[in-house]
Image 1: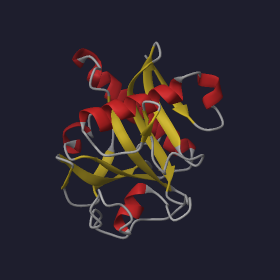
Image 2: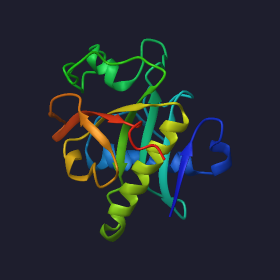
Image 3: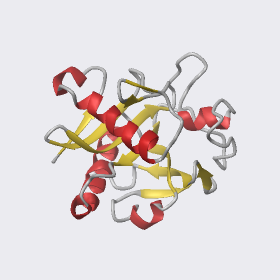
Image 4: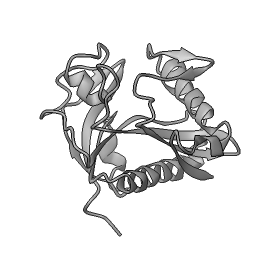
Length: 195
């Protein structure tokens, strides 16, 4: 099992990994969760998959087991910035605008985590290890990118596994049901557990 952080600068070094990540996202979000999201060529994507973002993939022999997208809160592409902020600004119909307790940050040292998934077909016996690898790589990559905090919209069961994965996280918004799944914004502090 490997963990790789992809960017537009390095994805050419990793063969089909980026395409496989988008295929796994389609399987998780469109096929399994039945979310109405853009897709093409068997891949899920949206307006936040730009050169500003990074993608963390846990993979084995070409199969993507889990993934996360990281986007700087300073990103801009047309009218869009980052998913949580754009939802708060009322630009996204599928996510309530009252998802955060406070105004969405725009800061060099804050990144957003979105499109978090562990593939449905990831064997149960390795799911905990896959999830831990995904979170560890997300934290490592975010720190390397200059993040002190990561703001994420994730499944609301995060308190069950956050401490196990070494996350210093707190609720940043209310629990919301989005397309039948309970989600919540969390604020992850990356400064407390630096090595």
